[in-house]
Image (cartoon, rainbow, N blue to C red; front, side):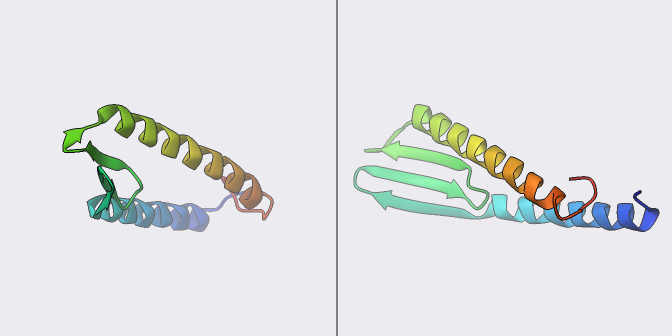
Length: 90
């Protein structure tokens, strides 16, 4: 059974995680590799891919989709491991 203190603590942790996520979204890293220029945010979202100066939205969509699916798979696996530790709500 979850008590009020646990709920309050979980809400505080969620708020902190949301704040961290917003901060990560502000971090931009630009990488040059051959004919490509890639801008990626701290939350691993591909902001822009340029190939020889031309924007490649098809690659942006493909990479972002694959990253999102990978994150879902990791979250699913971690949720299973954390629930085995007796953490409520996971």
